[in-house]
Image (cartoon, rainbow, N blue to C red; front, side):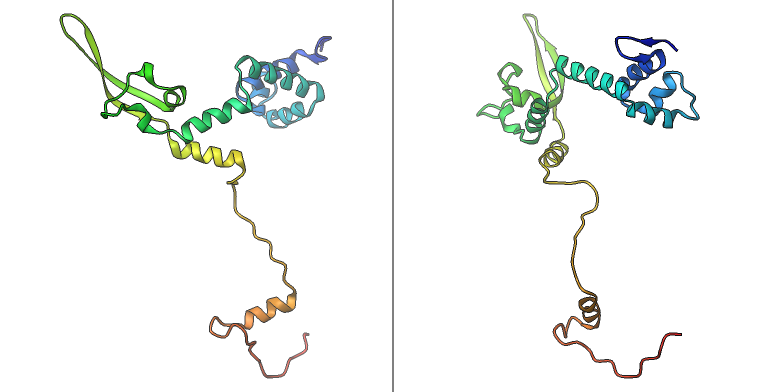
Amino acid sequence: MLVNPATGLNVKQEKFVQEYLVDLNAKQAAIRAGYSPHTAESQGSRLLGHAKVAELINAKLAASSKKAALTIERVDQEIARLAFSDMRKLYDADGNLKPQSEWDDDTAAAVASLEITSASSKDKSSAVVKKLKLWDKGSALLLASRRLGILKDGASTVTVNLTLEQLIMMSYKSPDDAEKPKVIEGKAEAAK
């Protein structure tokens, strides 16, 4: 196959890069790029490990992120807007919903949807908000906790260092008699 001198990749490899950027699914990208569905999973994995493929993917992802102004700081800001949203900012002192033009950026970002009904009179039409919904604050707090490392996914692991003697002694203790080891009398038989 011909190799593109600009990328150092052949046509199929370049197609894989384009397809991988669609959904970041290596197996499906390999299939869409023309690799066999039977070997697509291993081909996708192999292609991701290919230095020039990885370089092109990273360059295209960086360019896409820059174009979309997608930064860690921006993502953190959006998570914070949802996690720390305060519904009271939507209302004035009399309990009336403020016009959208008066909402600050953080408050506006926290609103997921508005259901509006319109009523018209002879002179003008007016819109009345019937239902207002905010984004899920719990999910945003969960994302924020993960981002800060406060919450980690998976099972918690506790490491305890005990000697074999301590483990044996603990097995003989009852809750009522935590300090005194039990004495077992009898003869020990040799293992056969």
